[in-house]
Image (cartoon, rainbow, N blue to C red; front, side, top):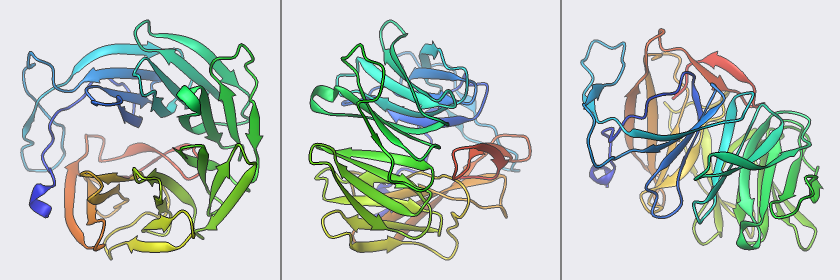
Length: 323
């Protein structure tokens, strides 16, 4: 299966003057890409413009010459944040998106006019995650450093949260939404599933700090990334771990690294931390069903001795080496 997994960069998106903390494809058919940066901006790109720009070379401090990578086209820049952008969510109609970060507020944007429709404030710290939810995506869900998950009504003139979920004992790092349920991962090592309408909360104990969630299309299982260098596939009904993905060389014990489903849910994909090779990052790929590691892709970092500004388990930005 490894030969079917792409390992060559298809495009390079430039323009940010700081580290990029959030990346999201537009909704189906996924033509565009949004990025959120430490430079306080959100940028919209067409990664494959019809008129190809001159090829550029990716930065690398290795002795090998980097291959030419096509450059995507910057379509629009969205400026309103006063602090770093940490999370993005795109509505299914592609007309709106939500962003959050160090401002302690959720920004709801109109894509075409590049203006904010709403600004929802109320969190007591950085907002690490944001998602759309509800019928017609009428709600925005946010989770942050203040340990709370908050629900906001996009259609109401009332800018206060309509619900505040405060069961977590530490920072909320990641969110997922399945039908009428909100799933939240926390530094306290728990994954909590909220049935908002029924007022019910189900808690699954992971043990290590949870940094990433991604659900399968049928909503029955969830991929959980955590700071014990393991990725777990969890059954949402029973809370049982169906499979764990790990390797002796795979390390994730300090930084918030995304673990996602890829290749039409055939693979588990994740970055990691590798202080012994600061000049490159690493992308790991496991077969979803067998749990076998099928590929490890090295990704050259830029200059500055391979050091990057990254987001720690508490949502705070720090310097380190990260894939």
